[in-house]
Length: 398
Image (cartoon, rainbow, N blue to C red; front, side, top):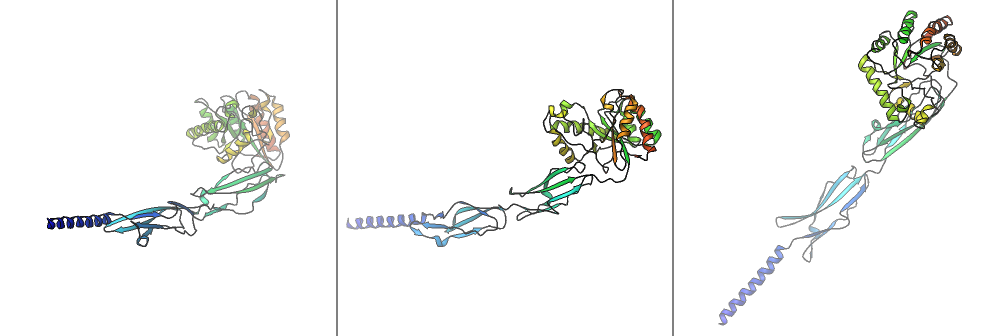
Protein backbone atom coordinates (compact mmCIF):
# COMPACT_ATOMS: atom_id res chain seq x y z
CA UNK A 1 0.00 0.00 0.00
CA UNK A 2 2.78 2.35 0.97
CA UNK A 3 4.59 1.50 -2.21
CA UNK A 4 1.55 2.36 -4.33
CA UNK A 5 1.18 5.72 -2.60
CA UNK A 6 4.81 6.53 -3.31
CA UNK A 7 4.33 5.68 -7.00
CA UNK A 8 1.20 7.83 -7.28
CA UNK A 9 2.94 10.76 -5.62
CA UNK A 10 5.89 10.48 -7.97
CA UNK A 11 3.61 10.44 -10.98
CA UNK A 12 1.82 13.56 -9.74
CA UNK A 13 5.10 15.37 -9.21
CA UNK A 14 6.30 14.41 -12.70
CA UNK A 15 3.04 15.62 -14.25
CA UNK A 16 3.30 18.92 -12.42
CA UNK A 17 6.87 19.37 -13.59
CA UNK A 18 6.01 18.57 -17.20
CA UNK A 19 2.96 20.80 -17.10
CA UNK A 20 5.01 23.72 -15.82
CA UNK A 21 7.71 23.12 -18.38
CA UNK A 22 5.17 22.87 -21.20
CA UNK A 23 3.51 26.07 -20.09
CA UNK A 24 6.83 27.88 -20.18
CA UNK A 25 7.65 26.46 -23.61
CA UNK A 26 4.29 27.50 -25.05
CA UNK A 27 4.67 31.16 -24.07
CA UNK A 28 5.22 33.64 -26.97
CA UNK A 29 7.14 36.91 -26.88
CA UNK A 30 5.09 40.11 -26.53
CA UNK A 31 6.51 43.03 -28.52
CA UNK A 32 5.22 46.54 -27.94
CA UNK A 33 6.07 49.68 -29.87
CA UNK A 34 7.37 52.63 -27.94
CA UNK A 35 5.67 55.67 -29.36
CA UNK A 36 3.24 55.86 -32.28
CA UNK A 37 2.52 53.09 -34.76
CA UNK A 38 2.55 55.58 -37.65
CA UNK A 39 5.04 58.45 -37.73
CA UNK A 40 5.27 61.33 -40.22
CA UNK A 41 8.54 63.20 -40.79
CA UNK A 42 9.76 65.85 -43.20
CA UNK A 43 12.10 64.79 -45.98
CA UNK A 44 15.74 65.53 -45.25
CA UNK A 45 15.40 65.53 -41.47
CA UNK A 46 16.90 63.03 -39.04
CA UNK A 47 14.62 60.35 -37.66
CA UNK A 48 15.00 59.35 -34.01
CA UNK A 49 13.25 56.04 -33.57
CA UNK A 50 11.40 55.34 -30.31
CA UNK A 51 12.08 51.63 -30.63
CA UNK A 52 10.14 48.80 -29.02
CA UNK A 53 10.14 46.52 -25.95
CA UNK A 54 9.77 42.77 -25.70
CA UNK A 55 8.85 40.42 -22.84
CA UNK A 56 8.49 36.69 -22.43
CA UNK A 57 6.22 36.12 -19.52
CA UNK A 58 7.65 38.28 -16.76
CA UNK A 59 11.08 38.30 -18.37
CA UNK A 60 12.38 41.36 -20.25
CA UNK A 61 13.90 40.23 -23.57
CA UNK A 62 14.13 43.63 -25.29
CA UNK A 63 17.77 42.96 -25.99
CA UNK A 64 16.79 40.12 -28.32
CA UNK A 65 14.87 42.45 -30.69
CA UNK A 66 16.18 42.51 -34.25
CA UNK A 67 15.33 45.77 -36.03
CA UNK A 68 15.10 46.00 -39.83
CA UNK A 69 13.92 48.86 -42.07
CA UNK A 70 14.04 50.34 -45.57
CA UNK A 71 13.87 53.93 -44.38
CA UNK A 72 15.28 56.68 -46.59
CA UNK A 73 14.67 60.11 -45.09
CA UNK A 74 15.94 61.81 -48.24
CA UNK A 75 13.17 60.46 -50.41
CA UNK A 76 9.41 60.91 -50.18
CA UNK A 77 7.65 57.65 -49.48
CA UNK A 78 6.13 55.25 -46.97
CA UNK A 79 8.57 53.02 -45.13
CA UNK A 80 8.39 50.18 -42.60
CA UNK A 81 10.48 49.52 -39.49
CA UNK A 82 10.11 45.94 -38.26
CA UNK A 83 10.98 44.73 -34.75
CA UNK A 84 11.44 40.94 -34.56
CA UNK A 85 12.09 38.42 -31.78
CA UNK A 86 12.92 34.83 -32.63
CA UNK A 87 11.91 31.94 -30.36
CA UNK A 88 12.85 28.48 -31.41
CA UNK A 89 12.00 28.40 -35.12
CA UNK A 90 9.30 31.06 -34.94
CA UNK A 91 9.60 34.81 -35.54
CA UNK A 92 7.36 37.34 -33.83
CA UNK A 93 7.19 40.90 -35.20
CA UNK A 94 5.53 44.27 -34.97
CA UNK A 95 5.83 47.08 -37.52
CA UNK A 96 5.99 50.86 -37.40
CA UNK A 97 5.09 52.93 -40.50
CA UNK A 98 7.19 56.00 -41.23
CA UNK A 99 5.88 58.43 -43.82
CA UNK A 100 8.49 60.77 -45.28
CA UNK A 101 6.72 63.82 -46.66
CA UNK A 102 7.80 66.84 -48.68
CA UNK A 103 6.76 70.20 -47.24
CA UNK A 104 9.08 72.34 -49.34
CA UNK A 105 7.53 74.10 -52.33
CA UNK A 106 9.52 74.33 -55.58
CA UNK A 107 11.81 77.25 -56.25
CA UNK A 108 10.30 79.25 -59.13
CA UNK A 109 12.63 81.84 -60.64
CA UNK A 110 11.71 84.37 -63.29
CA UNK A 111 14.31 85.19 -65.91
CA UNK A 112 14.63 88.90 -66.45
CA UNK A 113 12.88 91.56 -64.44
CA UNK A 114 9.58 90.96 -62.66
CA UNK A 115 8.46 94.39 -63.89
CA UNK A 116 8.85 95.25 -67.56
CA UNK A 117 7.80 97.97 -69.96
CA UNK A 118 7.22 97.57 -73.70
CA UNK A 119 6.28 100.09 -76.36
CA UNK A 120 2.85 99.90 -77.90
CA UNK A 121 2.96 97.76 -81.04
CA UNK A 122 6.12 95.86 -80.12
CA UNK A 123 5.79 92.10 -79.82
CA UNK A 124 6.22 90.94 -76.24
CA UNK A 125 8.35 87.90 -75.57
CA UNK A 126 8.44 86.36 -72.11
CA UNK A 127 12.06 86.09 -70.91
CA UNK A 128 11.18 82.72 -69.38
CA UNK A 129 11.56 81.01 -66.03
CA UNK A 130 13.05 78.00 -64.23
CA UNK A 131 11.65 75.79 -61.49
CA UNK A 132 13.41 73.21 -59.34
CA UNK A 133 12.19 71.05 -56.48
CA UNK A 134 14.12 69.40 -53.67
CA UNK A 135 12.32 66.12 -54.34
CA UNK A 136 11.28 66.17 -58.00
CA UNK A 137 14.31 67.95 -59.46
CA UNK A 138 13.77 70.12 -62.54
CA UNK A 139 10.05 70.91 -62.81
CA UNK A 140 10.30 73.78 -65.30
CA UNK A 141 8.16 71.87 -67.78
CA UNK A 142 5.34 71.77 -65.23
CA UNK A 143 5.08 75.55 -64.89
CA UNK A 144 1.69 76.90 -65.95
CA UNK A 145 1.40 80.50 -67.12
CA UNK A 146 -1.87 82.40 -67.01
CA UNK A 147 -2.72 85.89 -68.16
CA UNK A 148 -1.77 87.62 -71.38
CA UNK A 149 -0.11 90.74 -72.73
CA UNK A 150 -1.75 92.70 -75.52
CA UNK A 151 1.10 94.61 -77.14
CA UNK A 152 -1.37 96.48 -79.31
CA UNK A 153 -3.35 98.03 -76.46
CA UNK A 154 -1.76 100.30 -73.86
CA UNK A 155 -2.29 99.20 -70.28
CA UNK A 156 -0.97 97.22 -67.34
CA UNK A 157 -0.84 93.43 -67.65
CA UNK A 158 -0.05 90.62 -65.27
CA UNK A 159 1.34 87.15 -65.95
CA UNK A 160 1.06 84.54 -63.22
CA UNK A 161 3.38 81.53 -63.09
CA UNK A 162 2.52 78.49 -60.99
CA UNK A 163 4.13 75.10 -60.43
CA UNK A 164 3.39 72.22 -58.07
CA UNK A 165 5.49 69.22 -57.08
CA UNK A 166 4.17 65.68 -56.68
CA UNK A 167 3.41 66.35 -53.03
CA UNK A 168 1.12 69.23 -53.91
CA UNK A 169 3.42 72.02 -52.73
CA UNK A 170 2.82 75.03 -54.95
CA UNK A 171 5.01 77.99 -55.82
CA UNK A 172 3.82 81.10 -57.65
CA UNK A 173 5.42 84.16 -59.20
CA UNK A 174 4.04 87.24 -60.93
CA UNK A 175 5.44 89.41 -63.70
CA UNK A 176 3.92 92.81 -64.40
CA UNK A 177 4.15 94.30 -67.87
CA UNK A 178 3.27 97.85 -68.85
CA UNK A 179 2.43 98.52 -72.48
CA UNK A 180 2.83 102.23 -73.07
CA UNK A 181 2.29 104.44 -76.11
CA UNK A 182 2.44 106.09 -78.43
CA UNK A 183 3.09 103.31 -80.91
CA UNK A 184 6.24 103.42 -82.93
CA UNK A 185 5.51 104.03 -86.61
CA UNK A 186 7.30 101.57 -88.83
CA UNK A 187 7.22 103.88 -91.83
CA UNK A 188 5.11 101.44 -93.81
CA UNK A 189 1.87 102.85 -95.14
CA UNK A 190 -0.20 99.70 -95.48
CA UNK A 191 -3.92 99.23 -96.08
CA UNK A 192 -5.43 95.97 -94.88
CA UNK A 193 -8.86 95.58 -96.45
CA UNK A 194 -11.02 93.30 -94.31
CA UNK A 195 -14.52 91.99 -95.05
CA UNK A 196 -16.85 90.54 -92.43
CA UNK A 197 -19.92 88.28 -92.55
CA UNK A 198 -19.40 86.57 -95.90
CA UNK A 199 -19.13 84.75 -98.13
CA UNK A 200 -22.19 85.86 -100.07
CA UNK A 201 -23.39 84.82 -103.51
CA UNK A 202 -23.63 88.31 -105.07
CA UNK A 203 -21.29 90.75 -103.35
CA UNK A 204 -18.26 88.56 -102.48
CA UNK A 205 -17.66 87.50 -106.13
CA UNK A 206 -17.70 91.17 -107.19
CA UNK A 207 -15.18 92.02 -104.48
CA UNK A 208 -12.94 89.11 -105.53
CA UNK A 209 -13.03 90.25 -109.15
CA UNK A 210 -12.00 93.78 -108.18
CA UNK A 211 -9.18 92.53 -105.97
CA UNK A 212 -7.90 90.31 -108.78
CA UNK A 213 -8.09 93.19 -111.27
CA UNK A 214 -5.86 95.38 -109.07
CA UNK A 215 -3.71 92.48 -107.80
CA UNK A 216 -4.65 93.39 -104.23
CA UNK A 217 -4.83 90.89 -101.38
CA UNK A 218 -7.42 91.21 -98.62
CA UNK A 219 -8.77 89.37 -95.58
CA UNK A 220 -12.18 87.74 -95.14
CA UNK A 221 -13.57 87.16 -91.65
CA UNK A 222 -16.17 84.58 -92.53
CA UNK A 223 -19.26 83.14 -90.90
CA UNK A 224 -20.90 79.77 -91.55
CA UNK A 225 -21.36 78.90 -95.21
CA UNK A 226 -23.19 76.30 -97.27
CA UNK A 227 -22.62 74.28 -100.44
CA UNK A 228 -23.54 77.26 -102.59
CA UNK A 229 -20.98 79.61 -101.04
CA UNK A 230 -18.22 77.03 -100.42
CA UNK A 231 -16.74 77.51 -103.94
CA UNK A 232 -16.57 81.25 -103.28
CA UNK A 233 -14.74 80.59 -100.03
CA UNK A 234 -12.31 78.29 -101.82
CA UNK A 235 -11.68 81.02 -104.38
CA UNK A 236 -10.73 83.39 -101.55
CA UNK A 237 -8.11 80.88 -100.50
CA UNK A 238 -6.85 80.04 -104.01
CA UNK A 239 -6.57 83.75 -104.89
CA UNK A 240 -4.13 84.21 -102.00
CA UNK A 241 -6.36 86.09 -99.62
CA UNK A 242 -6.41 85.45 -95.87
CA UNK A 243 -9.46 83.60 -94.56
CA UNK A 244 -10.07 84.14 -90.85
CA UNK A 245 -12.69 83.23 -88.25
CA UNK A 246 -15.57 85.56 -87.42
CA UNK A 247 -18.38 83.41 -86.02
CA UNK A 248 -20.31 80.29 -86.93
CA UNK A 249 -23.69 81.74 -85.94
CA UNK A 250 -23.00 85.46 -85.36
CA UNK A 251 -25.76 85.25 -82.76
CA UNK A 252 -24.74 87.61 -79.97
CA UNK A 253 -27.20 86.13 -77.48
CA UNK A 254 -25.72 82.66 -77.95
CA UNK A 255 -22.02 83.32 -78.31
CA UNK A 256 -21.72 85.92 -75.57
CA UNK A 257 -23.61 84.04 -72.88
CA UNK A 258 -20.40 82.33 -71.69
CA UNK A 259 -16.75 81.77 -72.57
CA UNK A 260 -17.42 78.12 -73.36
CA UNK A 261 -20.33 79.02 -75.66
CA UNK A 262 -18.14 81.47 -77.58
CA UNK A 263 -15.26 79.04 -77.95
CA UNK A 264 -17.58 76.23 -79.05
CA UNK A 265 -19.00 78.46 -81.78
CA UNK A 266 -15.50 79.58 -82.77
CA UNK A 267 -14.03 76.09 -82.94
CA UNK A 268 -17.01 74.78 -84.89
CA UNK A 269 -16.27 77.23 -87.70
CA UNK A 270 -12.51 76.85 -87.45
CA UNK A 271 -12.72 73.08 -87.74
CA UNK A 272 -15.13 73.32 -90.67
CA UNK A 273 -12.77 75.68 -92.49
CA UNK A 274 -9.87 73.31 -91.94
CA UNK A 275 -11.87 70.36 -93.21
CA UNK A 276 -13.13 72.15 -96.32
CA UNK A 277 -10.06 74.19 -97.30
CA UNK A 278 -7.08 72.65 -95.49
CA UNK A 279 -6.23 75.91 -93.72
CA UNK A 280 -6.20 76.37 -89.95
CA UNK A 281 -6.96 80.02 -89.25
CA UNK A 282 -4.92 81.81 -86.61
CA UNK A 283 -6.64 85.18 -87.03
CA UNK A 284 -10.11 85.97 -85.72
CA UNK A 285 -12.41 88.93 -85.16
CA UNK A 286 -15.05 89.23 -82.48
CA UNK A 287 -18.56 89.96 -83.71
CA UNK A 288 -18.97 93.62 -82.82
CA UNK A 289 -15.23 93.91 -82.15
CA UNK A 290 -13.46 93.50 -78.82
CA UNK A 291 -14.87 96.86 -77.70
CA UNK A 292 -18.52 95.85 -78.13
CA UNK A 293 -20.84 96.50 -75.20
CA UNK A 294 -23.86 94.58 -76.46
CA UNK A 295 -22.24 91.48 -74.95
CA UNK A 296 -22.90 93.00 -71.52
CA UNK A 297 -26.58 92.11 -71.96
CA UNK A 298 -25.69 88.43 -71.87
CA UNK A 299 -22.59 88.21 -69.67
CA UNK A 300 -21.02 91.08 -67.78
CA UNK A 301 -17.25 91.24 -68.24
CA UNK A 302 -17.09 88.50 -70.88
CA UNK A 303 -14.98 90.41 -73.39
CA UNK A 304 -12.15 90.81 -70.90
CA UNK A 305 -12.22 87.06 -70.42
CA UNK A 306 -12.47 86.30 -74.12
CA UNK A 307 -9.52 88.40 -75.28
CA UNK A 308 -7.39 86.36 -72.89
CA UNK A 309 -9.03 83.08 -73.81
CA UNK A 310 -8.58 83.41 -77.58
CA UNK A 311 -4.98 84.53 -77.11
CA UNK A 312 -4.22 81.46 -74.99
CA UNK A 313 -6.00 79.39 -77.66
CA UNK A 314 -3.40 80.47 -80.21
CA UNK A 315 -5.30 83.22 -81.99
CA UNK A 316 -4.39 86.77 -82.86
CA UNK A 317 -7.60 88.78 -82.70
CA UNK A 318 -7.99 91.80 -84.92
CA UNK A 319 -10.21 94.86 -84.64
CA UNK A 320 -9.93 97.85 -86.98
CA UNK A 321 -8.75 101.45 -86.98
CA UNK A 322 -10.52 102.57 -90.17
CA UNK A 323 -14.30 102.19 -90.42
CA UNK A 324 -15.97 102.21 -93.85
CA UNK A 325 -19.32 102.82 -92.06
CA UNK A 326 -21.00 100.29 -94.36
CA UNK A 327 -22.42 98.62 -91.22
CA UNK A 328 -24.56 101.67 -90.52
CA UNK A 329 -27.17 100.46 -93.01
CA UNK A 330 -27.75 98.70 -96.29
CA UNK A 331 -26.67 100.42 -99.51
CA UNK A 332 -24.78 103.19 -97.77
CA UNK A 333 -23.88 105.72 -100.48
CA UNK A 334 -20.65 104.91 -102.28
CA UNK A 335 -19.35 108.42 -101.69
CA UNK A 336 -19.81 108.07 -97.94
CA UNK A 337 -17.99 104.74 -97.83
CA UNK A 338 -15.09 106.12 -99.85
CA UNK A 339 -14.77 109.32 -97.83
CA UNK A 340 -15.03 107.42 -94.54
CA UNK A 341 -12.12 105.17 -95.50
CA UNK A 342 -9.87 107.74 -97.17
CA UNK A 343 -10.50 110.25 -94.41
CA UNK A 344 -9.17 107.89 -91.72
CA UNK A 345 -6.11 106.56 -93.54
CA UNK A 346 -2.76 107.54 -92.01
CA UNK A 347 0.70 107.31 -93.50
CA UNK A 348 3.36 105.34 -91.66
CA UNK A 349 1.01 102.90 -89.97
CA UNK A 350 -1.06 99.79 -90.54
CA UNK A 351 -4.56 100.83 -91.62
CA UNK A 352 -7.02 98.03 -90.91
CA UNK A 353 -10.24 98.83 -92.80
CA UNK A 354 -13.57 97.38 -91.69
CA UNK A 355 -15.94 96.44 -94.52
CA UNK A 356 -18.68 93.84 -95.03
CA UNK A 357 -19.50 91.52 -97.91
CA UNK A 358 -23.04 90.30 -97.29
CA UNK A 359 -25.48 90.48 -100.19
CA UNK A 360 -26.86 93.69 -98.68
CA UNK A 361 -23.55 95.51 -99.23
CA UNK A 362 -23.65 96.18 -102.99
CA UNK A 363 -22.35 99.71 -102.50
CA UNK A 364 -19.30 98.39 -100.66
CA UNK A 365 -18.37 96.41 -103.77
CA UNK A 366 -18.92 99.52 -105.89
CA UNK A 367 -16.79 101.69 -103.58
CA UNK A 368 -13.86 99.27 -103.55
CA UNK A 369 -12.20 100.35 -106.85
CA UNK A 370 -12.27 103.98 -105.73
CA UNK A 371 -10.67 103.08 -102.38
CA UNK A 372 -7.94 101.04 -104.05
CA UNK A 373 -7.19 103.74 -106.61
CA UNK A 374 -6.94 106.35 -103.85
CA UNK A 375 -4.56 104.19 -101.86
CA UNK A 376 -2.28 103.44 -104.80
CA UNK A 377 -2.26 107.06 -105.90
CA UNK A 378 -1.24 108.26 -102.44
CA UNK A 379 1.61 105.82 -101.88
CA UNK A 380 -0.11 103.11 -99.87
CA UNK A 381 0.44 99.40 -100.35
CA UNK A 382 -2.19 96.72 -99.83
CA UNK A 383 -1.71 93.44 -98.01
CA UNK A 384 -3.64 90.56 -96.50
CA UNK A 385 -3.60 90.30 -92.72
CA UNK A 386 -1.06 87.97 -91.13
CA UNK A 387 0.18 86.99 -87.69
CA UNK A 388 3.24 89.25 -87.90
CA UNK A 389 1.36 92.49 -88.67
CA UNK A 390 0.40 95.24 -86.26
CA UNK A 391 -2.83 94.07 -84.63
CA UNK A 392 -5.31 96.92 -84.38
CA UNK A 393 -6.98 96.53 -80.99
CA UNK A 394 -9.67 98.63 -79.39
CA UNK A 395 -10.31 99.28 -75.70
CA UNK A 396 -12.21 96.41 -74.10
CA UNK A 397 -15.31 97.93 -72.53
CA UNK A 398 -17.01 94.82 -71.15
